[in-house]
Image 1 (cartoon, rainbow, N blue to C red):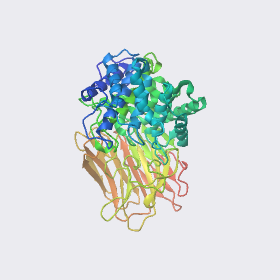
Image 2: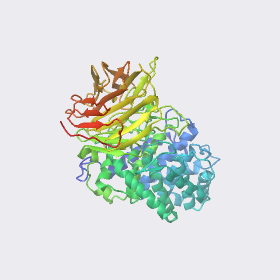
Image 3: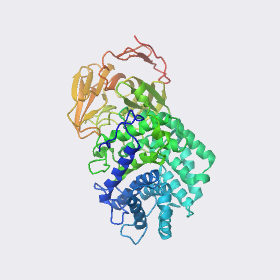
Image 4: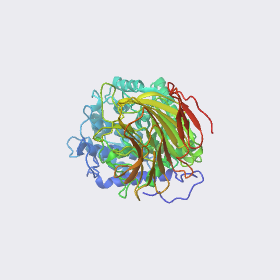
Length: 621
C-alpha cells in the first residue's frame, strides 16, 4: 500500500505523514477485513493456515483485534465515521456472545487463546463506549459481560497474559459486572515481580526481553488506568508512569532512520505495534520526548512498512515482516494474529489539536549523531550510525529460556549475538553466532546466556560449550573477543551479519581471514579475523527463502579446524560507502589483555580479568 497523496506539510518535513495518513491506513485495514467477515460479523476468518488454537478461535481473533483498531478510529473521530463501522462491530458482539448463534465465540477457559482476545474486546469497548456500548440493548450487554466474566477465577499463563485478566476484569468492574478485585491486584503485583530496572520488564520469569515491553508490559498498565479511573491506586499508577517514562528514553533508539524497528524477539508479525508505547506515554502523561519526535518515530515506522507492501494488495496484514515469511511466526500465530498491530493506532485517541499531531517533526536519535547506549537490565548494547541510519543491538542478556533447570531450543530471534534495523537473522543460518561444529556438521547452540555485564561501549556474557565473549562497539563495527575453554582440536565457526534482497543475490568477496557480502544498495556485511584465526579462509553462506528481509541472502563466516583459546573478530554492518572493514588489528599482551584497533584508528583494551566495566579506552592512532 502507498501513502495517500497529500502535499508535504511544513510540520512533517521528515516523513511527510499526518494524522490523515494514519486514518487512511486504518480505514484500508478495516476495509480489507470485510470480505472475510461471517454473516453476523462475529468472526473474521482470514485466508491462511490456522493457528494451533484452530479456526474457531482464529475467527474470534480476527474480530477482537480489528475491533481494537475500529475503536481507536471511532473514538479518535468522536464517532464521526461511517455508521456501518459501528453497526458491524455491535452486530458482532450480539452474535459472538449469543450461545445460540452459529457464530458464537469459544469460551474463555484456562490458558486458552480467547483470554488474549477478551482483553482486546474490553479495551475496544471502553474506548468506544459512548458510540457503541452505551447504545447496545441491555440483553446484549448482559451477554457480553457474561462471556467476559468467564475470566473470573480462570487459570492464566504466568506472563503478559496476567494483564489480559487485569484489563478484562477492570472493564467488568467499570460496567458493574461481577469481577475479582483480588485477581486484578494479583496481576498487577506480578508485573512488579518482573521489573528489572531501567524501564525493563522480563515477560515472565527468566530473561525474556523483547518488544513485549513495548506492546504489552508497559501498554496494558496505561490502558488499565484509563479503564479504572478513580479506582486505580495512585501509587501504582505513579510507579507505572515512571517506568514507562524511563523505558521511552531507550525505546526511541530502536528505530532506524528509515523507520524500521530493530528486528529482534518474537511476534514480529505485529510490526508497527512497536510504536504503541510512544503514544501511550503521551496518553498517560509519562512522555519524556518532544511531541514532534513522537510523531516522527511512530509515523516513520508505519510509513516504512507501507512502503514495503504492508498491508498487501488485498489490504491484509500477512504472517511475515514485509512479505509472508513463516520464520517470524509462532505456534499461536493465526491468519488474524498480525492485527495486534492495531495498537499502533492508539495515537488517534489524542485530539487532532494535540502537539503530537501539530508540532514540527524532530529527528530521531539515529539521525543526529552516532550513539552507543548500554541497557544493563536486558543485557544489551545499542549502537547506531547517522551516516546510514542503522541501529544495531548487541545481545548479551536475552535468551527467552525458562529458568533453570528447564531447557529449550535456541530461537534465532533471541540467541544471536546481534540484531539490527536493516537485517534479520537467517532461519536457520550461521549469522551472528559462534559455534563449535560437530563431526556431522551440526553447530552448537548458544544456549542459556549468562550475562557478565554491560557498560559504556561493551558487554559480555558466557554461553554453554565453554565460550565467553566480550563485545566492544564503535561506529558500524563490533569487535568480539572470545575466550574458549573447549576440547583441543575443536572446529569453530563464526558468522557475521546476514544481508538479504529480493531483487538479486548479494555480491560476495572472500580472502584469507575475511569475507564480505554486499547488497545492491550498498548495505555491506563484513567479517575479519583479527587474532587466533590463523589461516582460516573466509567464506559466505548463501541461501534462498531463509530471511525475512529478502528472498536471497548471504552471510560471511570464518571456520577454523583447530580452534585457538582466544579469538578476536571484527564484524561490520554498514550502508555508508565510506565505512571500511580494513585497517583493524588486535594484539595480545602477556597478561592476556587484548589491544584493539578499529578501522578508523580508535583503540580499546579488553583486560583479561576485567571485561566490564568499560575500561582501557584509548584514542585515535
